[in-house]
Length: 297
Image (cartoon, rainbow, N blue to C red):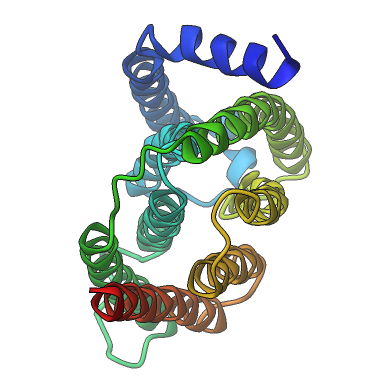
């Protein structure tokens, strides 16, 4: 039994126990605890002068606490992204769309906490324009994600050949390695995050905006995983249409990664371009497959 088969069997033993539900429950518990802790933290700095210096003497909105559980729940989405790798490359890309859309929607909860609830709403207020941009971009991403899945399901195939089964084993090995990296990077990021918070609070500065909280680094890993799977897939099913579509998926992952370190609204333009690029590639792939099938018939 070679190493690939051993890793595949180990992967199957782990996921035969349905760890998704267990991780989901643990994530929900942490989200609840994080939400309560953040609410208590805001209550403390708003009502006790002894520790009000933590926010530079400024009161914080309780709406900011919504951001914390939403950030924790995103971890579960990344976990699902990893375990979906053996199922389908297209589904893997679709899950990336979901995560980026949720990160965009999460920005609303951070930005809305900066708004003075007693201030008069003005259409030219930069903060309100920023919030409107977050919501508009999130809705467009949601619509494009639904469109992507529509074309993905309409092109799904049921190839059960030995070559595909062998390729699934390779994808399980990649998923297993990425799961280890995900856990390691998560713990390291949490440690760095709390260290940054401690240093900033001691300096009387607000906590940092965790928009790219470990996601940018993990997208770097996904880029190389995409390229590896793309090259390896050619050993079992080489065609121009498949190669082109999967190469487009790699480009999409690269664009999504760069969007995480780009200022808005340029970041949203990059994300929407990546979405439209993949959807177009999927439509063209569907057309090519149908055209080839009809020509053979």
